[in-house]
Image (cartoon, rainbow, N blue to C red; front, side):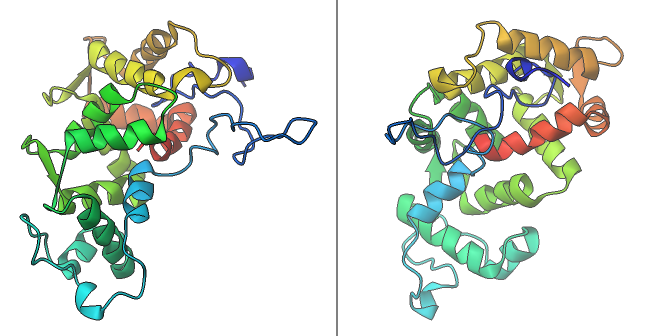
Length: 258
């Protein structure tokens, strides 16, 4: 087992830049004064996108005619509720709540990249979330239209939060495959890793070394690139991930930075 200070470079799918697990509710000094909680796996174990959208949802108890995805005021009309329920692992009530929040934040029925950047800046004020939000937005924006529909939004969230291991790994591969050519290069992996470290900011504990992202990518490719051709295919990616405990445990971090 690795020492706490070395967890940031374990070859996992996402960097555990936070070191040991801590008390997510924060810590108190001896005089009882409240301190800003350190960022740890536990304290980040929330989906930022869900928190953002639920916070904007209308109060429960709305008129029943409002609960079946009201469509009249939006430019983009989403799929019917029953169809979305069949396509995702969310319940009817969850979809209703998600749509209320989505509609309040994005009256047009579409979310753009600037909104993503704003969301992650709010949840990670200690760092620079701009680049990571850009990459994440592109992973959701499958048709490269520059905007994300509610259907794509909840289908992606369903995979990330409740999908099978293989489904999550396929989504992860899509995130790292920045140019969507079907391969992950070292440069692409490094760009994603650096964006996550930048977003985590200076409050990570223990502090992150400047070359931590590079070291992480080197270990990742040593495990993944079986034929040493300089790229990782989706088959190499899924097969290696499923056989590696470090990588599988780091899958939980998707819920920390999504």
